[in-house]
Amino acid sequence: MLNGVIGFLSGVIGGMGIGGGAILIPALTMFFGIEQHTAQGLNVACFIPTAIFALIIHIKNKNVDIKTCVVIGLSGIVGAVAGSYLASIVMSDMLRKLFGGFLLIIGVLEITKGIKLFKEKRTEKPGGVR
Image (cartoon, rainbow, N blue to C red; front, top):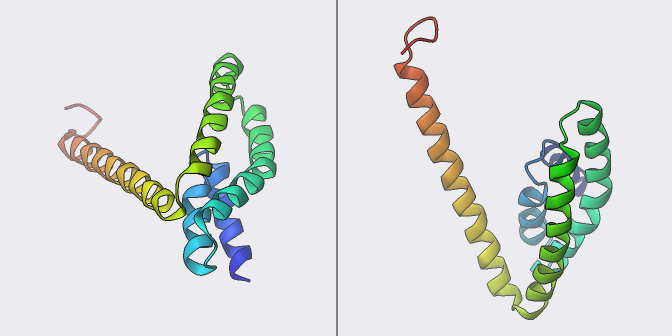
């Protein structure tokens, strides 16, 4: 049951384009005791079908710039090969800490961005004029 809930939440976040691995990997390591390397591999395997369906919907809604997608996609393939190799030589504990640090940095950046937007909205005068 728990793995179904985790899969659903990961799919929702992934479908929004945020990255389901941010939920799936910590959940697999914390709740199921799965080793970091295995959790990351499972994340990639689960990402493929969810990404395909999300991509179809985003293309239908005209939210995909194909030219940009090709450039980023090809560069991403090279990065994925490098990252997979790097992950295979880094110890699981270190990999877990690096992933946690990455999530922490992203979280701090998003909170900072949200605070800035909140402050900007508070200083706007009625009618959208500052």
